[in-house]
Image (cartoon, rainbow, N blue to C red; front, top):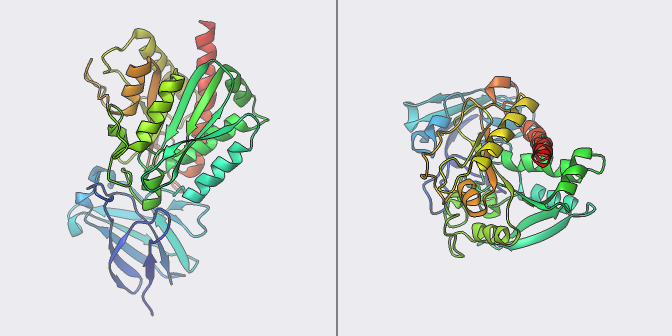
Length: 380
């Protein structure tokens, strides 16, 4: 029987083929351009119908987050609409750390990815649909190094300025699925939550902060290997025009509430990270952050407050990271939302793990939580 074929020369594609033998292949992940980060993969296997595939991704001990591979199962789709999980096994000792994926597709072509991709074409559809909604304005904040537009959707008439932004790290595609849910909540004319939010606040939404890295199939960096979430203290046109454009726009509007949406490779849960270490931390800021987490925890089982990152010591917060910079610069309540590449174990789904559908729903839940948070704030 002929060998399978493997390709990744498409939007967000990433894989290197080391060898193919029948329905088995040895593979490696290409590093981000001008960077050592490697974790994201996305490729197609053809000639695969009814054949048991054995796909081994090698060299993972040298990946960006090797602790993310134990317990991880690859995402798989035969129609590029529904993504489930393929049985996957990680070996720390074999092939410099290897993930072996086993799957028998019914179709001749099947796609595998680190998480369900969110293509740039879908991004443009999202932006186009939202921009046609009543009261929504589309702004181009700037142009990326690859010449792509940096899109910002603006809506609402309220006095508070809310900034929502996602995919500083392009391989964290669950962040833009989250954006789809949040934007839908805001623009749906039948949503009383959306209508009330737009009365209370003006929203500035950047669905994808890093379109160059997204298209190139990067995990964490832009076109020149810059980790955007380490650029917020001193962004430059040469290395981080995306951050410079967003921060300049924030300087114009001010920021009262901000959420930076991400994914975490290792922790099997949804959680928040805050700004406890900033030099000018106020009790009111900290109380606002804590209360949002309490309200979100009460609203959905797809969130928890036990697992997460260590908090920075007082005065030791890294101001090059957006959540810290925004809290310090504007006195805002800001936060980083992290979703898992694996699953949210407190409410696990063995078939899909964490998924686009759950990311979308979490976006809606976060916006409903924000409304409750604002109502309490206004009543105080």
